[in-house]
Image (cartoon, rainbow, N blue to C red; front, side):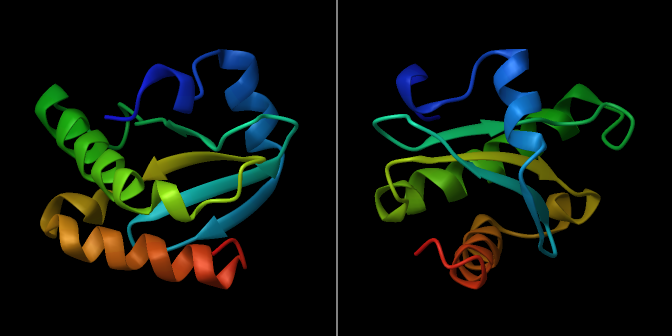
Amino acid sequence: MLPKSQRLNLKKDFKWVAAGKKVETKYLKLFIRRGENKEPRVGIAVSSTIFKNSTQRNRARRLASQAFQSTYYLLPTTINIVALPKKGILDVKSSEVLLDLRMALERAELI
């Protein structure tokens, strides 16, 4: 898990970023918005309507978080990202989620 200073924590921050650019991948839906922050900030929101059990929600959150930890150093400093895991994320390994995230960030011209 990323340190608290590198995460989006407030509901208003999540809503602000969700109003930005949307990028769809196979396993994640990303909302991206540039801000005035000094370091990249990432938030992960997991829907209880998509993932019924808490174990499913926690696994989806862990897989997404691990992918962001591996790519965090590549992100520009002013970027804010909210990630929403999709149902298919539970069926794959973390390396596939990481590859999917990197391709999405390259398509969005962030790395």
